[in-house]
Image (cartoon, rainbow, N blue to C red; front, side, top):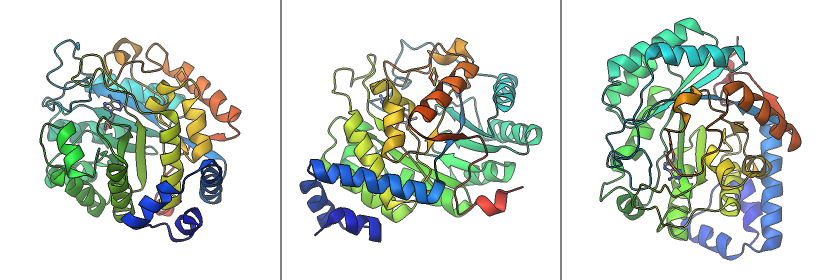
Length: 350
Ligand code: 5AD
Ligand code: FES
C-alpha cells in the first residue's frame, strides 16, 4: 500500500493505517511526503504566506501546565499585563506595518475577565473594522466564547495539547482533556474559525499519542493547526527533558497539510527557536502562516514559555522586515490580507 498516496487522496487514515504509515517512512517516503504537502499547499494558497501580528498581553496564568514557563507555580517569572490602551497602541503599530490580523494571546489571567475581554475586542474591532481578531486566551465556559464572538472576535486558538488522555494527564497533573476538546467543538459551532494544535516531542509523547492527535484533527477539521517543538524552560519541572526536533515538527507539518489541505498552518516561533532556519523549513514542509510579535519589546522577554525564544529583543518593524526576507528566501511571498480560511473568505471579503 502506498500510504502517502492514500493520505493525499482520502485525507484520512485509521489508527492501524497510521501505524503502517509510520513504519513505512523511509528516506524516499519522507521526500515524497514533503513534495505532496508542497503541492497541496500550492493548490490551495499558491505561494502566499499569511502574516498575523501577535500581541502577548499578559503572562499571568492561573494554570500549572508542567511544560510552560508562565505556569502559576513558577515564582521566578516577573509578571506583567498590558493595559487596554497599551494593547491598542500595539495594534496601531501593527496596522501601520500592514497587519490585518491581530492575535491576542495570554495566560489565563483572572484580571482579564469575560467583560474586559469583550470590551477589548469591541474597541479593537471599532478602531480597525477591516481587521480580523484572533483570541488565544485559554478555556472558558461556552457562554463566554459566545460573548467574545458577539463582540467581534473572528478566530480562536486553543491548542488541544494532547488528544491522548494519558499524555494530557501527565502534562497537566492528572487533569482530563475532555473539557478542552469539547471547547473546540463549542467554538466551532459558535462560528469561530478554530485552531487546535500540540507540541511535538513533548516529554512522554509516543507515536501512538501522535496518532491520537492526527485522528483528532481528522475528526475535528479545524481551520488552523498550531504545532511546534516542545522546548524545555529552565524554571519548570520539565527543565531537563529533551526538546522536540525540527525534523519531526516538519514531518508533522507535512502530514497535517495532507489531512487538511486548506488548513492555515503556522511556522511557529518555537520552530524558529529550535533552529535558525526553522520557520523557512516549516514553510517548505507545508506551513503557510507566520506570526511575528507586536508586543512592546519591554515585555517580550517575560513571555518566556520556553528557553531560547527568538525575537525577544526585536522591534515589531524589525521582525516585519526580517520575516519578509525569510519568506522570500524560501521562495514564497508575503500576503498581508486578513487571510481567512477558504471556507470563510467570501463572507469576509470587502
Ligand atoms: N515548549 C514549546 N511550546 C510550548 N507551549 C507552552 N510551553 C511550551 C514549551 N515549553 C505552547 C503550548 C501553548 C502555546 C501557547 O505554547 O502548546 O498552547
Ligand atoms: Fe523577529 Fe526575525 S522575525 S527578528
